[in-house]
Length: 207
Image 1 (cartoon, one colour):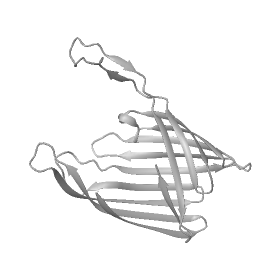
Image 2 (tube, helix red, strand yellow):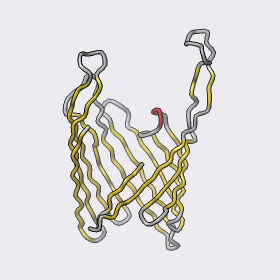
Image 3 (cartoon, helix red, strand yellow):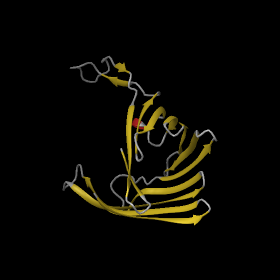
Image 4 (tube, helix red, strand yellow):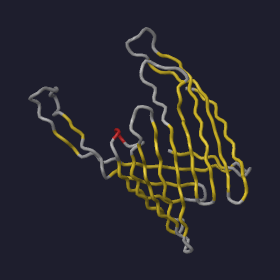
């Protein structure tokens, strides 16, 4: 796909700031069971963030289809709130929630808290529904650390990794087939790099 992006940040003074952004693009989807191999459709997204000192509140709808496809369109809307509790010792606790709304489906909620020790090491606990593996709820423990001014790495592990059912090698599925299960905890590695453009703004790369 191809997309164009636009964003703007407005400072209101006294620790208040508004950030807004939008995107519009063209996506190519494979077509199965029809003449032709792909289909083009447009999409757009929007979002804005309100910042007041240690409190942030955001709203976004990142992927809205401009035309209906042959499968139901899901265009989730997200609401995010976060507050940073700071201590005089230099430690801080970052807590927040993400809520996802999808028409016709249940509302899903994420909760998280990350404790930062001296801004050198972060320990987090995340309860995820909106972006968990295979659609199952996830309880993730994480640890992260900055490796320089603009570079940060981290690791997370899902304690609620569901078992995966498999058939023995060489046996196809049938009523008499025995099914074995194996543990499947999920590991996550994330990297964040902020690029200083020299104009007071930072561009972020996350993986």
